[in-house]
Length: 87
Image 1 (tube, rainbow, N blue to C red):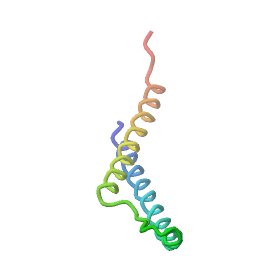
Image 2 (image 1 turned 90 degrees about the vertical axis):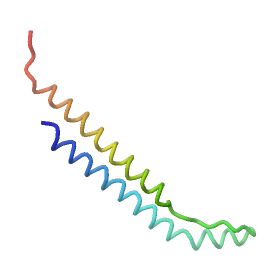
Image 3 (image 1 turned 30 degrees about the vertical axis):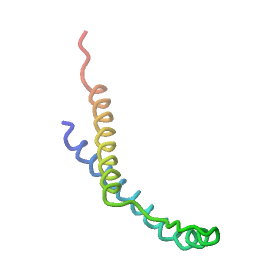
């Protein structure tokens, strides 16, 4: 009974993790030139970089697990509401 909801939760979590990665990549690309100019002004060799593959994997895995957990909790609450109570 819960399986379709859990699959949807995993999919939503994976999509949310992918969206978060995309936003970070866009922000990093947009802010990199300004960060380079600021670092050069202070004589620093700082460079702005996005997440590496390991961090991307952790991000996607965390999003997936959180989506699955949220779907599990929501399905459990709804199933508890509709199950008949025994006296």
